[in-house]
Amino acid sequence: MTSFIQTLGAAWQRTGSLLCVGLDPEPTKFPAALAGRSDAIFEFCREIVDATAAYACSFKPQIAYFAAHRAEDQLEALIAHIHEKHPGLPVILDAKRGDIGSTAEQYAREAFERFKADAVTVNPYMGFDSIEPWLAHKGKGVIVLCRTSNPGGSDLQFLETGGKPLYQVVADLAANKWNASGELGLVVGATFPKEIETVRGIVGDMPLLIPGIGAQGGDVEATVKAGRTANGTGMLINSSRAIIYASKGEDYAQAAAMAARETRERINAYR
Image (cartoon, rainbow, N blue to C red; front, side, top):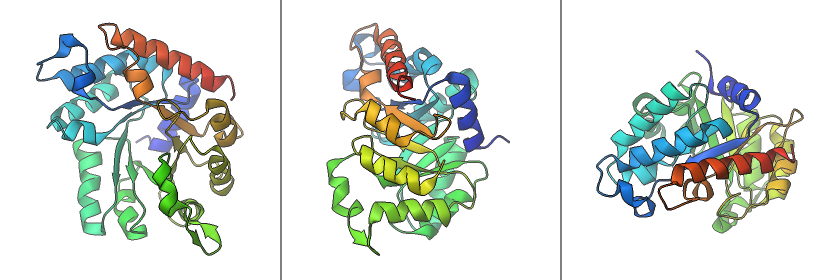
């Protein structure tokens, strides 16, 4: 079985891309042709995936956008479609789960056994015993929230503990104590390039999932220069709304492809 880290590394090399396309489907923003369809969420995301796969190293569906519309079955179908039609592009389920061990076990089964995700985002606030059940799933990626892109992240992530801000403590724990599976990564927002550089210095070549370059306004050049590894990879730079809603018309898939290609090229200009 090929692990998440192996699959991701191969995808970086094969695609020449660090772009992760986020899938945050909101039916009110869909083109009119999908209105009223019971499978509208799946069809919208499928079209986006098929149009952008040539320019991406991974996909990141956000579970809330599916669950809110009772569309978990469409999420299952979408991940199955990605694995079948675009093998080698890992799927990261953006769920940000974080709970005690016995509950975490069930969340892990949901992500990895039901949805068949290759990796999942998790919240480390409850400590290692809330992370450990995810690591029991061999070859699956676990991406830990570290320095998030939202302004309120600083409320807790910059609190000093042991003379260091909390996000740096999380980075150190993830890299040096928690990574028993060798499949951990960290979430670090593009809105904070200085912190990306700091985290990279702490964790070495560990993959960084970096949201915030699209609608949230993160600087691509600063992000890439701060987070790249020695071989010019190491990052999954996520863009969601700026790509999937590049057009509200019937050309939405073509517009998404163009936006994904342009984003990949902007990223690659600084690698």
